[in-house]
Image (cartoon, rainbow, N blue to C red; front, side):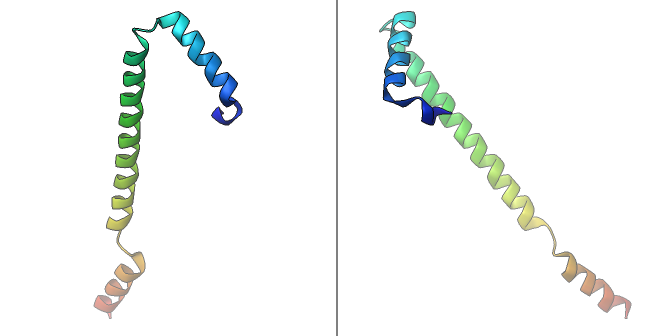
Length: 73
């Protein structure tokens, strides 16, 4: 999606944002956007790491089945 914007498009977006919000609000908006992006990345990493931990905790069913077969015999 963003790969099609290009440099002229980014400049146009910046000029429009400057007109709408004014020069005093742009740094605040940039900081808020940066914090939001950082929070999103950390939440995504936590979700991925919790999924990885769940996969590691799953028992190997073939090993469990072998143990059950050995106890039955």
